Length: 303
Ligand code: NAI
Image: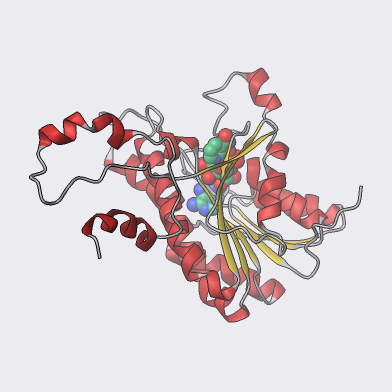
């Protein structure tokens, strides 16, 4: 089969690429011609410690397959780390075209037991990490009038998951960041999309049975992430779900709603009476930006 989705001449930065999903993204991009910066702090699943081995092994694998890659060991949870990562890319390859924000940790605990440190550590790596790296590279992408940026969310953020209040907040915050960057990147040909993956990795090793983990290959997620990195990808502001050979799109939608007569008093009782109509998402629509959403409500004001 011919491979027309190629990255020759493109430079990709993949965070947390020393293992799990990020490793497969890095290998696949390199196999399709990209020069890859393999970033990984090499920490434990809870964010503690650090080693250069994670990133080094993936760089070695890419090079032995004939590809081009450099390792970067910065932590994306700090501004300096993210700036150092983008500097690694520019020093090695002179530019950046593609950024996959994938690095992640977990500190699962019920909200009652969650410490401030558990909260902060997870927000720092996921939400601030995504911000730090994207902020460091954004002026460069704008100047080049080109960028393919991928963020990583989770079903925990989209729908909630017991014991993951910190992670859920961070992961949905990332979707909010995408919603605005898709608009700000539009005229510079910067596309920003988000993956919600399901994959067997050390992060899911404690919550899923071994036989299921083995079947949830990161290779089943990577194809749509690679598509999002491609210059032919014209999608932006999308959340794609992938795992176990399943692919779909998740979206924030708003139901048709109810317009009350503004000439009459609007009481909590009237709201209660209409609640079924207010809450239905049957016939829901998506909005491209906040103005579109506001205009739908403002229709009730007349002209
Ligand atoms: P993983 O633990 O195998 O990979 C994450 C990598 O990020 C690790 O190699 C780790 O060393 C690195 N890392 C952690 N903190 C870092 C930092 N501050 N700076 C740089 N590197 C850092 O886990 P996996 O499953 O491959 O996760 C990848 C992403 O996908 C994460 O954002 C995770 O939250 C997300 N995700 C994964 C799901 C799954 O089913 N595996 C489900 C939903 C989301």
